[in-house]
Image 1 (cartoon, rainbow, N blue to C red):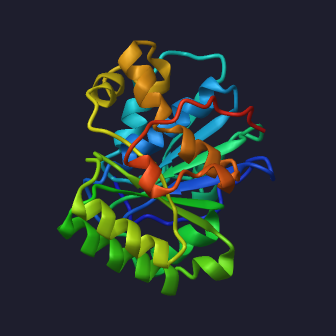
Image 2 (cartoon, rainbow, N blue to C red):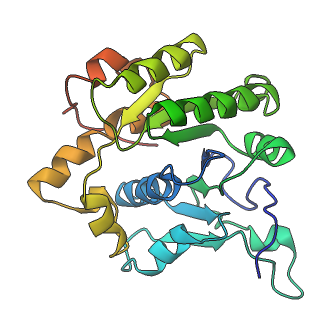
Length: 255
């Protein structure tokens, strides 16, 4: 049985665990793809990771169920479900004490108090969007609510956008970049419509688990986002450069 999502700081995670929410009030923007690929990336870096799925569709935890055992397994939490009888909500949302990265996959439609709860619970917000005139208007409304109702500035929460299913040099991309720049919100990465994401999802993998030449090229698109999440803002590449070249710099060692 599904329940209305209740967001709270995951219990028992290490005090210094980085908490990252992938959020957009609009559905179909690729939140689960971003969340699962981030979880897979951190697992490959040997950082114990807990993946919370607050989306009633449970795409992220279903992906995790397909994943083979790993040296550093990803802990999955079906957070959209009602706690089992005799179990408290805080127990349901517990994370292993060794957790170093918490990834939260949020449902569509988050707004108001739900959005404020997310902001209070995390260190970073990643907003995936697919740039288009219609998507840009929806993104503008959501970001405005995030800044006003979510009060991200007051909570000192860092916010970045991921341009998903990216098409270089489109007018929609330039329009979105100007809007976000005016709010000092970076576009931390651009991801293509690569079939690798579909192929990887069916096997419980992330794109960083794949070793083909074309997959390696797509992995480079994640470098600015990872660097931003790990608080190296200086390496977020300006939008104009993102539209004309791909990064090849290796990701620095993570904490």
